Length: 157
Image (cartoon, rainbow, N blue to C red; front, side, top):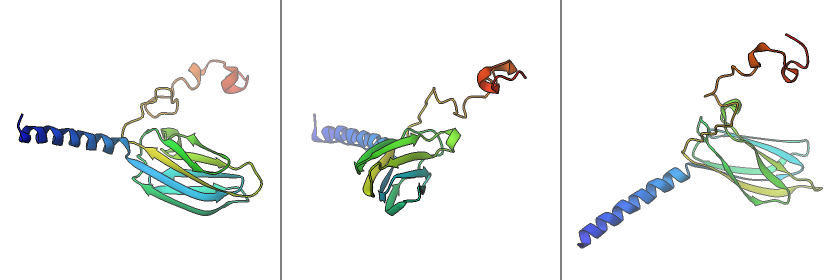
């Protein structure tokens, strides 16, 4: 093998690795803030909204690198700090207009500093079990208009 062929193969492998890394992390949200009790953080595209209870959220900072796509993707959460719980409440779906929703819950008295990273990739999330996905129709929602205790609370149509 010549040096040129070895370099050519190495360049090809390097390019494939670069492409796969680019696909692996299409976007990231980094969020930090002081939370007393509960905070709900919503990410829609590049827009972030944070709501807290009466005790509130203080000193919140965030950085969005890459917009959350307007289609189903799977987001992953990495907690970086805080004494309570940080969890994903909703994955982006047609039902919530492709918004990721995170809850920060601090159960102890006083506020605590929290931080998390939310990541997503360019790949499509083909969740087959998401009943709210726009790819499915809603023909079975009323189950053919027949009597159903669950749907019509026991009243016959």
